[in-house]
Amino acid sequence: MADKVTVEVVERVAELANLELTEVESVEMVRDLNSILDYVAQLSELDTSHVEPLAQVAGLMQAGRGRLREDVVVPSLERATVLSQAPETDGAFFKVPKVIER
Amino acid sequence: MTFTEKPKTLKQLRAEIETGATKASDLANRYFERIERINPELNVYLHLSKDRALEQAERVDALAAKGDPLPALAGIPVGIKDVLVVRGIPSTAGSKILKDYIPPYDATSVARLEEAGSVLLGKLNCDEFAMGSSTENSAYGPVRNPVDPERVPGGSSGGSAAAVAANIAVATLGSDTGGSIRQPASFCGVVGVLPTWGRVSRYGLIAFASSLDRIGPFAGNVRDAATMLGVIAGFDPNDATSLDAPVDDYAAECEKPVEGMRIGVPAEYFGEGLDEEVRSAIEAGIARLRAAGCTIKPVSLPNTKYAIPTYYLVATAEASANLARFDGVRYGYRSPKSENLAGMYRHSRDEGFGAEVKRRILLGTYALSAGFYDAYYLKAQQVRRLLAEEFQRAFGEVDAIVTPTAPTPAFKLGEKTSDPLSMYLEDIYTVTASLAGICGVTVPCGVTKAGLPVGMQVLASHLREGTAFRVACAVEAAE
Image 1 (cartoon, chains in turn purple, brown):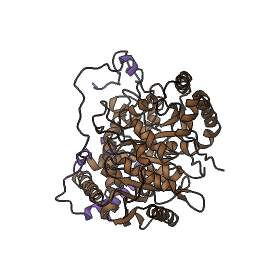
Image 2: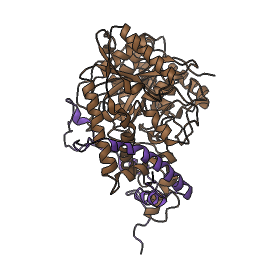
Image 3: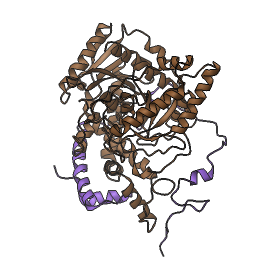
Image 4: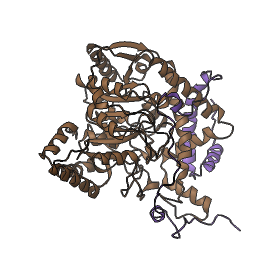
């Protein structure tokens, strides 16, 4: 079976996923993804042309689903508490490196 | 050398604490001493929460001294898988990207355990973001199986299973996406519970694959696991997907006889790849259920072989979306090589994530990408429905289904790390229940000649946890 995934494909997918791979990692990923995709190809043996996709299982259950809480304002975490876990802040906002190059 | 020790039951411990024969604070200290002695050998705990534990234990002792009624888990030492957040205690999900993360809130399941009086000893090692079947993918080193430290404890909740097996916690919480509670419980010889999807609030669980993720307990016996589930189950306004259905009295279900129950045995779970010693242990367990008055019936689940490919497409697709949040902005690791925003994302994620996590993000991104979505993700969702319907049909004929939990007993460290696919096949008997959203319990069912535990998986339909506990109790009683 011809490889579905080449180094170029892995690099493209890595870019979509915001991952940077070393050359060694790219080669390993090509090997692993091809082996996994060959294995999952067996799903094509099944005729699913009339099957509705199932994204989540709550719809299969009779009881207990779909209760939403009241839409009322309740206290949330303090800003300082939340910001304390960030790599960089100015005390009011999260700080990130420059976004727009000029 | 083995590190196993059976914890006392909740009933025994609670009685000792109630009468004052044991003080909760002494009990907590004894557990911390045992952890200090054993943990360097097994690498089960990543962080201890000593101050919080001893404060809670003193509150329980004060209640007991006054003769006030004690809550269900008063003074019981418990451990929490590191994918659940605990306020003020590092919660890393076994990942370097969350190395110094200190959550500002408690997961609902953790808060409920503590409201019920339990004493949180610390956070338990696991595969990074719960991705793995051996706990060898933790950024903080592998966990060793207390039964045989040359072997893995299973995964991804390897620390949660090993903690109970080594009696460095009386009970623990883990998470199960494709088998991550059941397989390690089986490998370590303890009880593990997969609740119905939505039965336990996922608020505060670091998400892997949201349509599959569940939180569930581990314990040394079925009744204790049932009591633990009773405490953490139920609707939570902070998780709109948690089920608003009454929580059954699981402990009472354990006392009901199994005589007359219909137990299904699917041939598809006893085929090629099943270890012979595991097969004979499970067959002996089934014979004991028959002797206890159950009717044993063959059931057919013909699409079972498609469950692993379906699972690895659905789970990785969801993971690629869920793990997009780790970007070095709001929490977690930020690479110093952050010349601009896009570079900051890429370098932080590259340096922060381990190989298996990257592999799954890439597979999931690929399965969701333009041109491949229909062939992979959509196809997997369609097969997922076929698998769920197959279970629904089977549960029209039987009350519970029993299978081996895993195809083999615990394997050696390093045995499967070079081939991701062989590791994925470890989940061959657990992923179908994950995809269908049904519940189950794994219970020890014999040992191999080498003394390695074998687990029997008891599956039941949505919200029928009581049925699964009842059957598991009968298996346990005959052990």
